[in-house]
Amino acid sequence: AMRRFEMLAGHCKRRGVARGEAAAYHMLGMIAQERLGLAAAERWYGKSLAIQEKHGNEYGAACTYHQLGRIAEERRDLMAAEQWYRQSLALWEKHGNEHGVASAYHQLGGIAEEQRDFETAEHYYQKVLLVREKLGDEYSSAVTCYQLGVIAEKQRNFVAAERKYRQALAIWKKYNDEHNMTLAYNGLGIIALEQQDFAVAEQWCLKALAILEKHGDENSAARIYHQLGIIARKRLYFTAAEQWHHNSLAIKEKYGDSCGAAKTYHELGIVAQELRN
Image (tube, rainbow, N blue to C red; front, top):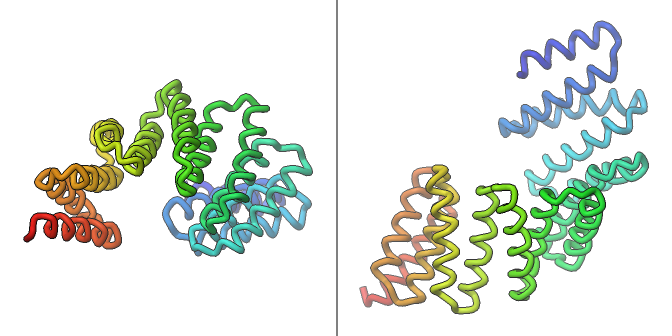
């Protein structure tokens, strides 16, 4: 793909087709971003943006601003990310691109959430829902419902969180999106765990795990194993808790997830303490 887009960029440059050259550079940036080469992606986007701004291609510039925001977010430079998204939003609003507006609002909501400014995050996510409902984009609205559930959960408003998770789950079930269904199942499991309803928490987590194991998603399965270990410990099933945590630990160590492994070691320590070992 990179070779072909580089050929396209050269072809357009030689013939003075600025819009095509900028589009090719943008795609090269997206490819670099997928391969986790953030510095290379940023360089390609910069080349694209210089042409777009020079020729007044505001639609193309808005797309590139948005992607530069994604790069800044991956680097945890939330201030820069917010600035890029706001630039993108201004152009989408100017040109009446409501899909673009919804995307920018969603990213701004995510930044506010990262900063634990839940009121602002909820404000942006509600704006996303309004746009997507207006466009009849039911599928995309599920992600926003889920994020609103996460915010409610973080604020310990479990009734609101459960309602939003169930809304998202209903849509994902309708479209048979099993990957995202596991997110809702896990969220519902966490709520049940927080409310000390351990049997229900286990049921939700096992539903998520069945899908993840079916699709061979080991990293996500490791998080569910960890959750099931905590549930088993809370129910005083210490042998089961230990087994769940060892399952989780094996995957985390396999993929070099040292932070996740540390959390599982901690849980294994608590189990050993409960067993007076």
